[in-house]
Image (cartoon, rainbow, N blue to C red; front, top):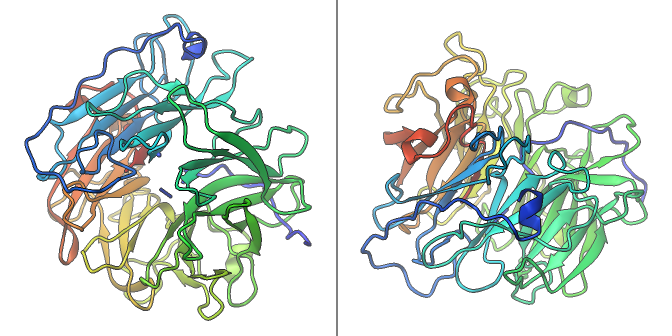
Length: 503
């Protein structure tokens, strides 16, 4: 194919993106500090469900919160993860578990454990496992970026993370979990194909995985066939074609630094590997771009939509697009990939029904999450606007909830929340960047997903998380709560609590 003209851009906030030590630990010689156990609650869990986000197997989804800049002992930016366990009564800070990276006294590891969190049942034992990106290049020049797994079990996550094996040598931190070959086992797609000379593809680590971190096999794939100089900035896994096999959307960039800002490639999964379906384009044949990606069925037709967050507005290319202040772009799925009957849709704050006004650098399209928030059977989209200014406060931040419907995503009925919304605890301040990360979670299994929004910059980068309940009318500020790492007994000073969320 003829490659679009693309320019290398900034690394995105997430590398997930859809569905989830030191050197001595890699040799198996280092133990982790004991984690605080999650107390059990007497409750009747839903039966017969295998949830990708249920770490202790009780039938209720759980929430993992990353604080990658946590100091552990003498080790700056070692990282920590806090887990809140779901129950019939919902989320509670009393049902918790805290995991920390080991303190290698005197070492400047800066591993940032708790980054790029994702959950998935990698070993198919009925308990979701938690993946975290870790950067070991600061520990040893012979090591680099790796993926660690905390295994799920009846008592919650394992205290000691396991190194995931067979990562390509040029793995750069971008990955997504899904059943890409349709065999019923979870797989991991990771950016990097093992050849540092041509980073034009990725590697699928096929499951099931064993508890030593090994998968069944590894296979490389191209982002764009016959074009070896692309690299991936963000992944999203989901079923676009309706065949119950996960497909992969990849935010790609061209290595040579030519003009342009990127593209989104669609790779359809199948028993023989990925099939390239081209790059996404809008109704005017313009290349669609996005810093964050998610896949979900917004109109309940059985085909997943590719939702792209275009948060980095302001380039020359943007000036002809409805993306002022950032935007969410929906490309509808179909049996062969992209729908042939429905054109992509742009939604920003200038779209009718959406609260606010589009202003440059608002950051709409950041921190995307997709799930049903009101129980009507249609999945909704949450996006952060961490650069939103209001009441004279620069970058105070807000969150938008956009509704799915039979006609797809709409601005009608959209809701906006900030720290200055009535009922929300706290007070908006300059530079809080509320909404820099989001998650949607049905912790009590009532078929309505509540909202978790984070401001990692809150309180001098200590970070805070807010929880908003879901009702039959959607997300509500009434009864919302907030907490930080200190509430959970986790490292808190400068920790950037909430920088990553895995639900």
